[in-house]
Image (cartoon, rainbow, N blue to C red):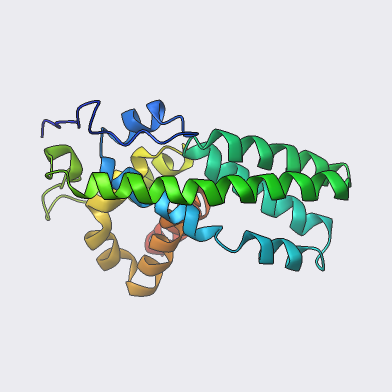
Length: 210
């Protein structure tokens, strides 16, 4: 299928988000991009409370929180949040609590500002007419699903795997079962590509076991 991308004025440019690479990976799918941005904002809407809880858990939890935020922000090109989270992770490694708290507060403030920008951009994207590129490339229902190839794509951490998942989800649910399919959707929605790949690989291993 030949994809038609959104024109430059239709793609939602959001201040503080470097989305050039993302636009290419998603093949101009503005609606999928906004879905990912909404998920990022929602996932860290209660970052302050999460930070307070992390204070009772110790340095490994603080470092893990910063690392996960850094990964999600970096994947979506949210540069200021990425910078704050990256430096916070380094502060956690150095056991510098003052710097860690300041940097995570910086990330929280940036995410708060991002939420308003995402809502504004979302309203604009909602007015766009569907484009061919908005739809995943759907293989024929009888075409076999190459689970190993899908797991390998997930391992690349590429956003292209999101479009592939959207195309394969109904058949993945049938192959993996409802419970594993739901878990896989959760990993994909939260950009946990390695966890998603591990789940698919486990299912693949179970299917090939004698």
